[in-house]
Length: 379
Image (cartoon, rainbow, N blue to C red; front, top):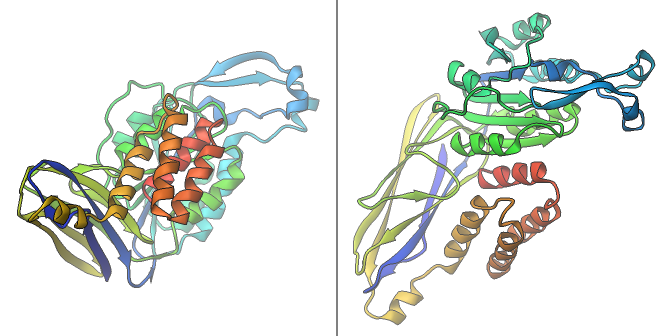
């Protein structure tokens, strides 16, 4: 069973147009052991994943340095390779073995590799069988056809994409997924702007890691053993355009719900509107499909003072905080972080204050910054 709380920023309208913010909180009342879910893994096998990385103190011994699918690689003497970081593909496969051993057996796994083509290694199989097939992963080419891969693979409850480079296929809008999409950017050479845009488009998350040893921790954080519901969808109905702030689409595909989710949006209302302005319908599955419906209403204020007193300033401030966070980019970084600080102070919410400080600390690292933004928007 899910608990759905829908709140609005104003209880009353007045004789001028205004922006009405809404907040939807979806929270599982009980958690169940994950069962029958489909977890899909897309693994970049382009050339750059197969090169060893020299330790910084031996970097000057590199020769024949060149860019391979967006990543600089070099050849090193054998004695340097003895101290080198193992190839990323080797690290990834070792961690995938841990991940597959961690997934309860009554769930299903698909693994695809992508480079110049998309290759299914295993589809809709038990984790133990998927584990046995990892030895079939083969080296790709200098291509990283990420858009192609996302549009060719099947839908799933969770989709995990691991890549260290930039897409080499033409940019395109990827298909809609009903589950959660998790992008893991590895190293310093992947294109975080592309992965951030794909995360925003799919209501997904972006994780940055310099070390694939962290992949298991990312998986455990994103694909939990106990869940509240599967195939969660949120339908929004209004006679006015509904503008979402931290999610996209209608219905909104949440996928597998493992903890609380907050959805923010706004509606621009005309003067003196009275009546139902938003219907929220949440469909989900726990053994069988269930549905919860909530509605928001507004009346007309008798005076401007009456209108002002009806405003929930906390919801306005939260909506504005997430709105500005969603528009944060490298060009408006300092200005937007200052705006976020001021809004967070007005709410007196310690989590927003702490997160704004965390963003300020990440200003010099756009990969980590973009990762933090997507995680806050959709967690």
